[in-house]
Each structure stands twice: as structure tokens, then as C-alpha cells.
Length: 366
Image (tube, rainbow, N blue to C red; front, side):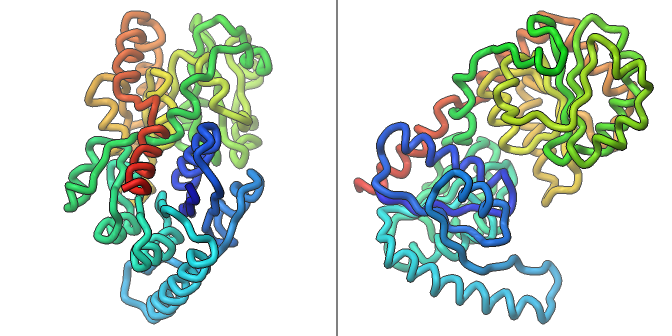
């Protein structure tokens, strides 16, 4: 098929789109693919680096308050639809899919207006503004969490597909990457990670808990985020930096590779992280970011914790003691780890990309 994919703004919109494209190529189901994004967005760098054809449109999101700037936003939206129609006319796609972010609104809406099959993919339990708008026009709405059903009134369009990132990581096997960080590969390990940029509250709680972690019989892989690393190192007592069961790093390249070597993950509850964690069945302690739109990370985390696959600590309740207590209880109980792992796998969708591809194929072949 010839397919246009669009999603931008955050990695949570872009990486599922890239995982879908990768799987379509693996299955030899693409004649040609075009990614539509913005020049300034994160997608510009990621998509171009992957060698995928990329075109841009200019678009911005609405301000929540009524301002004169929203008039400019409307003008941009209308002009981006005109440009999107030209892109579609030139490329001649069989189908168009949007994975979220303002940029996908114009291209998906334009495709609908031109009677081309359209799909949106919603990664979170709480739908984004763009997908709520597009839901009225598209042919199918693919969701990654069952809880997202309540977000859309067009129930007949809904298909539960999961997040394509899950399928991208599910076959990763255990390896010896822990050696790179001077840790022992076959020793129980917990990773504490606040996301690619890091999270100050998680870092501070971990720093203060290192004295207790140093006395345990399991390993702690503490990933601070690049922007916080120097500040974290300054605050840590040097004896913990030389402790055999503690490793402190700014970031880990190709993070999914290390996931199968972990017994527990502590961190944020973005949709991509949850997709990866549950695909591999890894127990988790989620500390949702309270700074995201509609507090969707809390809802994401609750959808996993309510089945017993994870625990949730609200950032407001995060302390060195609450962090250590929860980590130590899980790491010290192999039966609990096994139960959480089993429940996590049941929550995961290891064939998510193929499920989404079926949605696309069915519409193209209708």
C-alpha cells in the first residue's frame, strides 16, 4: 500500500508511527511511505534520520484562552489543509493515519475531505485534542488502552490495537548490557529512570535513598537524564558512586535493549513506556508526571496497576522512604515479582503493530 503517516510534537506520537512503518516494511506491505510533520518538531529529526520521505506543513495548536493569536492559528490550519491536499494529490496514498499532535489534524482531515480512508491511533487513556477532533471524520479509531473507549462517542469506529512499540520490543532477549555499567548481568536489578530528560523529584528521592539501596542484595541502575546528571553527581556521596551494586548514568542509548535484563522498572507512565514494559512483562512502579495534559499519565498508570501489574506513587507522595519501601518489597519477593510479571504480560499487546496493520488493510481492501 501507499501510506501517509503523520504524528508529531512528542516521542509518544512519533515512535508508534515509526514502529508501524518498520513493521509494514518487515512484512513487505509498503509500496511507498510519506511522513508529514513540522520542520521544527521532534519528528523532523527522527524521521529524516531514519531515511523516510518527509514533508512539512506549518501548523500550531490553539491557545486555551481566547486570544488574537488563535485567529492566526485558524489561518494556519486552513492553509495547512490546502497544502495537505496538494501533498495527497501528488503522493496518491491508499490510506492516511494520524498518531496525534496538531500536525496530524490537517493531513488526516484533508484525506477525509478527499474520500481517502483514514485512521487515527490514540496511545493514551485520555485522548488528545487533535484525535478528539478527528474522531468525527475518520473511518477507524485505534486505541492502545481499553480505558480509552470512554473518550470517544463514535463507538462503532473503535478498534483495540495496542501500541506498535510493544511489538517492536517483544522479541528482545536477555543480554549482557549490564556489564557496560559495571553491574553483574545475572544479578536482580531495578532501574530508576525519570524519562529522557530526567525528573528532578525522582532523582532527589533516589539520591536520598541510596544509603539504603547500597545495603541491599540487588542492583540499582539509576538513570538521571542528561540535563540532571552533573547536578545529581554533585549531590551523591562518593562512596555510593563506587558501590558495587549501584550504577549512576545520564542516559542509556537504545534503552529497550536493556529491558529484558531488569526485574523492576521505576519511572514515568508515558504510553510508549507502558507498551514496552507490558509487552515484556516487567513489574513496574509508576510515578506519573503531573505536568502532562489532563493528567493522562496517572490514568495510564492506573490502568496497569488496577490489574496488579504495577504500583503507583503520586509525585506528591514520593519520598525516599516510599520509594525504597516499594522497591524493596517487590525486589525482595520473587513470588510477587512473578505474579506482577504474569499480570503485566496479560495487559501487554505483543502483536500491536500487526493489529493496526489489519485495520489499515481492511480499509484499503474494503
